[in-house]
Length: 510
Image 1: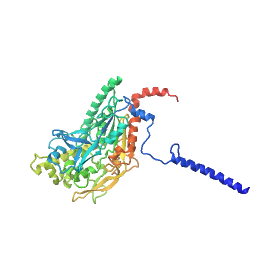
Image 2 (image 1 turned 45 degrees about the vertical axis):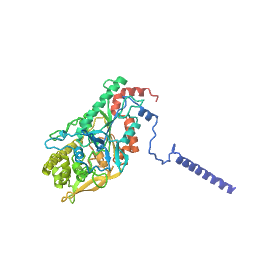
Image 3 (image 1 turned 120 degrees about the vertical axis):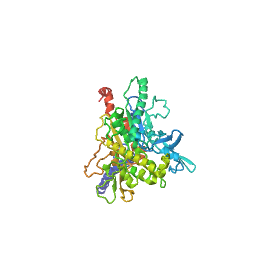
Image 4 (image 1 turned 60 degrees about the vertical axis):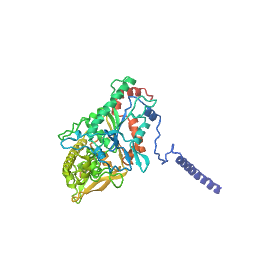
């Protein structure tokens, strides 16, 4: 009897253990209903409500505008019709190139004229969705913004550039392309004209389809990299230019009249160090010959406007006191260190850019004048973007930042040679620091607090483990961008539809 009792006792112990183990094994095999599963997935499941929201077409859903970043549109010389950016033959490297190509690609330079009056015949023709690369007899494509556009199409947006599907009455996705060489406030003014044109077209459709006259159409914006600066400037200042006297424009939030949600993706809100490095050494995609020599990329006013603020102490002299700082907005610093357009070695490029000038002295005078104008306007632009101000409550500012790659944070300059070398890295997306996307003003400062100090009031911030361009195709980005655009309501939406929503809630069976 005693032995039998022990056997029964063992059975009583073993049976529950087997049951529990079986439950755990079943839970591991099927995550549904499990508290224990560690399974992870790279794609979300969109439910009925999300699918219906994506399929919806009507005035309750904002159309979307995509604003690309630096290098993000195709450029063409309009007289000859020759493509100068967007098709690459032989390799990614653009140079050596013909004098006509260099002249068409560089930003115009002329003494006595402000930057906005310096015009040429090069124009932006479309967003860079794909790059046609021709190498060694083979043709293949490198994705530009095509993946981002595809994500938005899957979310239910209809590109203006595509034929309308049978079940849609009007486009809801617009691609704003601009000349990324040129001044950013100038491109913000072009964005304003673009918005007014699309708004008018949609208002006509809403009147025809829904009998809504002069409907207050609001746009959502998805802006990548430099495009985020263009969009934020427009949100703050509308189509105002920077005042000629060096003062700041009036912060009137003029762009908020037409913008509802602004999604900022990998934007250098506090600039980035590589702008200076590349204007000194050239922009390289491959090892070897620069894609763009210093004498070319340093003609672009837009590139100076993405330099880091002095407050970040991004450039310092070597063997200098801890609080040293190089005033990168002082033209004399560029002259003393022989940087960019101030480097006498760049006269080879200047000859192609300024063929009407006979001597190196004449060309240098024009180059230094252009350098001074670009630096002065860049400093003014950066100051305007860092004014503390709270946006209207009906605007949502949503940030997506890359946080996966060591990224240039600080460089040291050799006082004797002018050589500049990156000496410190911090987290970012390979080009833009996490702290820059946030516009964290603690960077480079002795005064410190354990929380974000920022002139931008972010509605939400998402960190993506991806490189600068990789953010735009990352599945976590795709999921959260779709939710932010399609599902998440803003104060503007609540205000506009409050009566209808309250009436609906009143009839709910709760």
